[in-house]
Length: 405
Image (cartoon, rainbow, N blue to C red; front, side, top):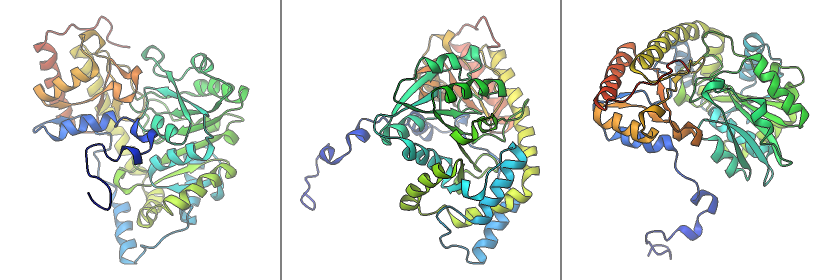
């Protein structure tokens, strides 16, 4: 016994939130625990750039440290950085925001959490396209809402469709969560697709939370934000950040942009929980927004070449693969093999030392797929493809009849 509490297995259950107790661990975390126990693997699992943060950003960080720029900033972030983000949104995405419409957050992950907590009353429903990033459903639940999952399909290029959304709307529906370019599928939404979603939002008076963390990582077409669609800017909260844009995942810096009243509600929560985003990260990104676009063009061009290598290689092996147009993921189907996503991924890891993420980690509709991240070197991608081919041949797994889905 310690401090009056008996130390027995499960003895803390009565103290824990029932919501948290009923929440599963992330499917990604579970699989990464397996990866950590395995030597000699080629990982196509970790969803972060393999590039180093640009020198101009690192130099700005060192300068900030040398100048003792290590104190709190304003809760909402450095005014200069918020102004620079407003310029970025205008110049790169044709979106027009004032400094007061922008909040600097601790990564896009915090921005997601803040957006849900700022708008959800108990029982409110949030529509979420699936497969999707693992944090959306738990964050809605933790905010007291109900996640309503809307399946997207390979034959629709994993786009969220109006006809599917409408069937899930009830009188409790509060908002639609968009996540394009998409993790895990690499799908994008074109302007015509977003116009359909905008029709739904306006017809049912819904908000839209648009996670655009991969906005700079598109290949054959430019990213379009739903806030660009007429009438949507006033009902959209945009979430974005610098982890993917400038290869700085560990710096933990993101932002939200939207109607000032909604951003102010998010700020209320942020100031009591995070106070402010890291000051040195803010100072560093300020320089990146001024001098870092050449880096982005180089990185995207390289990822585009790796994308073609991986997608073509998977198809040659006999794994049907949707053509990803954004982010840095391929999402091939393994349905025809007869294995579940978890079984395929675990056997591939232990037998041929290639780490991928089972599709069901991103929701039930991800079953039958695996996520492969191509943010790794061409040599490692080529070796990974050879190992996957060996794995498929060992089990004499059939090739799917249709390769290009």
